Length: 365
Image (cartoon, rainbow, N blue to C red; front, side, top):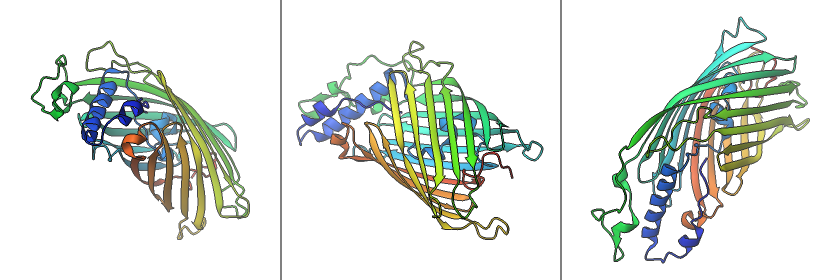
């Protein structure tokens, strides 16, 4: 989650001949803000494929196991390959055969985030443990805890400072006028927790397509408020609260299901609202009894990150595999520099996911 920065005013004053200078100054200032202010977390646009990044209680919530790889690149029109994020996620149930009504689950997430030409890189690894209880034949409640460790590092020699531009020309040997930094990396521990409620009515296999599934969660991250600065321990990473919910309901007697949802995140002075809807169309019926023919679904999403980006996405679900692509179309003040170009996101998932996340929450395999 990154703050929208008020660059639109001075960006508009840049002359055509000075566009390259303005872009480099923009990148340097962006990285300075990310370095000296309280940090903001990463996010992906295809939130249904980043379970543990949103809520540790989602570990093992939707099936026996899943493996997910995510990749996102942003703002390539400003600086190619300067902003990109990669993440790997695994989660699954433990002792499912012994625990028919209640079950334990665990998960692991690691991501690497590069922000800007200064090479500010964050590497973060988390382990999650969750426990889910069947409340009724239609509903479950799960809680989860997450703990991990992160490292942040930066390459100060890659920055371009205003003082290094003289008579319209840049020279990296010119003095920056900045106080030298005593550290180029730091390590911090991290702790979070969450809760998840699920309710399902009917089954995905019913011909009338009358299934309704509701899931809602609340999570808290950075509960330990770790030190988060290259300047020392004075700066702390703000706690982050995340609330999320979505509903899947089938359009009766059709092959179409709708999945509206939202996520609200608040971290220190920054907040984010992300809302929209997935349209899930069945291309091939899954044969429940024989298992020889696997279900195939086309999922088209349209979402809005308020004040930041409009996000169209396409996902294809074939048996245990899901492949997704989305694109952030920038609509903030930053669009003057990006020409509206945001970021491409690619996701690949494999796993036994109880009919792609939306089988009855209280029915076990």
